[in-house]
Length: 374
Ligand SMILES: Cc1ncc(COP(=O)(O)O)c(C=O)c1O
Image: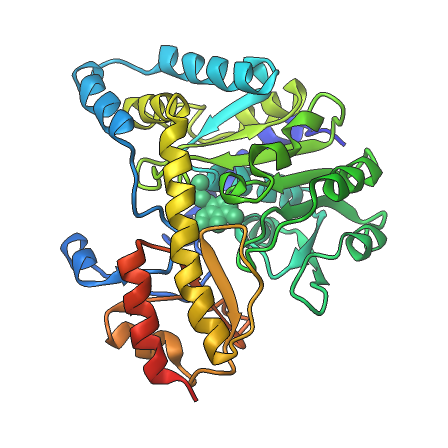
């Protein structure tokens, strides 16, 4: 299936209404709190939203500062430049890309696409829920496939669960909240086996942190599979969460259909996120540094969890998902009282998710959470 432009335009008003009632924190999949005021952030150690504590890079900051004097101009050229750079890096055409204000916009567009045709989203679960939520609100049904006994996505079960009702298969790789990564070849084989009349969305928000790195991306299949949409973001390893920059990669027809429906008409991003993203792509050293420091932070938590017998899967991301059983109940609230924000998926109450910040923050996390061991 490719995405039908005509239906989308007709139903766009309904979709806008759906978004208006959806609430301000729609992107968040998790039951964690945010300090209410900006200045409050410094009082908390933020291990709840998988942000990059090292970003933005100096190059990105410089690019934003330099660009501010042009903020009176629409950023058409900058949109084209970024798409050209992404295209060149991935062996595709600029027309294969849609730039959005964070990948949340891509996920919401896809969710609505399915919902408005009363279709079905099939997904291994737990996973990042934005596409599911937007889909459900617009009328989609959601079919969840359980993870295996080791909290890993089971691609065989997912393939078996595809039926004539399935409109879209959503795979987050590496997966949020579990942090696990699928072997690249297994995921490629899976994508090739999904029937052409079923859309596949692969959300690669954390691909830069994964063991396979960018080689694990499914972007190499975009020219081969007309039903594949990849969703990427500059919010994580690039450290630009607050600037809002993400993108979709797919065949030209799907990208056109997504753009027709995009409420911001592809200019929901402005000069600062565009130039910051563009500059960041030329700064692989920054990403390497962040990935290395992230591994250091993860090791601090692994060592403590191993010592205490806390069960977890090694993470291919900047967060660690662990069983809660070794800790007291209400751990999220107790940690908050101590100034450390962590997360629990609302319907996965037997697990906690801890984002990785700087090593000193992770040492503090270990020191504080030890008080709540049972
Ligand atoms: C898997 C995944 N996809 C997408 C997003 C949305 O990120 P953004 O809208 O900042 O690009 C997140 C944010 O946490 C995420 O974890």
